[in-house]
Each structure stands twice: as structure tokens, then as C-alpha cells.
Length: 362
Ligand SMILES: Cc1ncc(COP(=O)(O)O)c(C=O)c1O
Image (cartoon, rainbow, N blue to C red; front, side):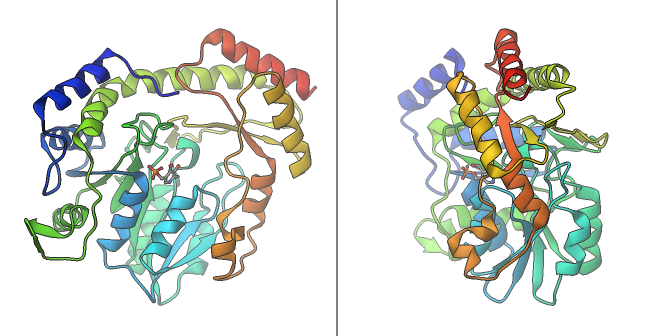
């Protein structure tokens, strides 16, 4: 459940009373303000507000002219939108395996997947834990590749003390209702590249510099003013949300320690997770064992979930493009499950979650 207060309600009311519900050529006053605030938060030169994280990902590749005949390297263990963006621009998604302890793309698997057609690498900061961005940047520089970081789940995370986007060419954020901060639906791109940012602003609104004069092929990916007004308030609250998520995650880790069947999430020294999801793993478990645990937890009122049951390379659309064998990805998809960690969770509820997990896995 998103946490909304009187600040968001008042901000929405102000927009409704102002009569400015959107900005015709891109962003309206609220969206501009939100972009400025978000750019500061992400330590980026530019922030471009759009109407979903998927739109941000799509635009990130489109804005770089990545298209038919090109390849983009990405993990298969992510939300579908990461791969969708590649498919939507007509490029070929090339899936590589993950590291079993972090669930993030394994940098060592990237270089062997590079061909003369490769144009970009798309690491995902899965569950809010940053990918190994310095290593990925190094590979990209060596092969002259563009790096799009899917930071949809990573608001408040950092890698070597730098926020998402620092080591990449562009970071794509989601502001969907379940995210660490939300505008209901919404997204953001952050980049330090002036020319690219300018192009993204055009693409967002039909490629128009002037009304009814499209200079480029674009789309309507504009963020409505009501959403931007909510975003401004949510961004102010993000540090408090992040602190509560961290506290809940630390509490879960403390209280779930010592269970032989459970692998707890790691936070390597170079990383600060946003704890979007607290994801554990059933050691040596089959998909049936894991699903039974989920079933038992839900029966006892614990909102456990699986992110993600089916790796993208095994979904019908992608399977017909090319077949991949990604052992770590497939194993993780069978064994992981996530426990509640959201900032609305009280200490007593964390205690109930851990007590119930202990009973079930004893
Ligand atoms: C990893 C990842 N990428 C992309 C997206 C797409 O974002 P949206 O739902 O805002 O389109 C999401 C979230 O939904 C996500 O979790």
C-alpha cells in the first residue's frame, strides 16, 4: 500500500484548482519542479519526467537510435519491462546469467556475449541492490557501448556511495504504486548528457519542438501535473521511507538468522540497497517446495510473493527469438521468495513474519 498523506492530497488539490493538468510541449510547472528536485536527488544534470518506468526504458534506447539489427545485453531475471524496451525498438535482447548471491547480472558473463551488433548493456538494480556498475562501465568503455541502468526499484540505493546513474549513461526509474516512492504511475530518466537529455525531452512529447511541428518520431510519454505534484511530496518523504525499509530489513535479517533452509539477502560492502524487496531463497529447494512455503505463509496472513517465477528468456515471445540456458537465473526463479519489508510494516508485524517463517521452515 502506498503511503499518502495530507501533503499529497493538498498538492493534488492545488493542481486541480490551478487548471493546469499537463504541459503541452513536455513538462508543466509541477513536472519541471519535480524534475529539478529529482535531478538533485539523483546527483544528475538532467531529469526527464515521463508517465511510466517502461516509457523511460523505451525512450532510453530510442533516444540512442538503438534499433533493428542491434543487440542489447541484459539479465533475464528482471521485470518484463526491461526486455520489452529492447524488443519495442526492434533490437535483439541478449540475455546473460546472474550471480547467485546478489541476483544481479554477472559482469563476467557480459563480455563473452558482446558481438559486432551489440550497442548497449542494461543492468538492473534488482530488489533495490545496485548491480556492479564500475565493472559494467569498464566493459562498456572498452567496447564503446551505452549503459542504461534500470533503477526502477532502486530509489535510495547507492554503489560506491554514488546513486544509480553515476556509472551509467542514463538511469531509468519507475514511480509505479508499489515503488519506494510513487506517483501512482510514472517514471523518470536521469542523465548527465546534455544533447541526449534534449532529445529525450522531444521524444517524450511527439518529437515536437514547436506545437504541431514534429521534428522527430516521438510519443506521448508526458507526466501529468497531478502525478508530478504527488512526486514532489513523495520525494521529500523518501529518506524516511528508506530508513524504515532499512530498519525492517535489518530486523528481518537479525531474526531469521540460523535457519538452515533459508539463504538471506546480502548487501555487499560497495552497495547500499534501497530494500525495495527483501528476497530470501530456499536452499536446495524445488519450485514445489518454494510454492508450498508461499502457500503456508499466505495462509497465516504473511504477504509473501515471488519476483520472478518465470525468467524472461523462458516467456513465449522471447523464447521464440532465441533459446538460452541460464542456470543461475533458472535456479533463482525456482527458489526465491520475498517477505514484507515496506515502510508501513510495524516492528510487531516484522516479529510475526519472522516467527511464522521460523515455524514453517523449522
Ligand atoms: C525492474 C523494473 N523495470 C521496469 C519496471 C517498469 O516500470 P513501470 O511499471 O513504471 O512501467 C519495473 C516496475 O514495475 C521494474 O520493477
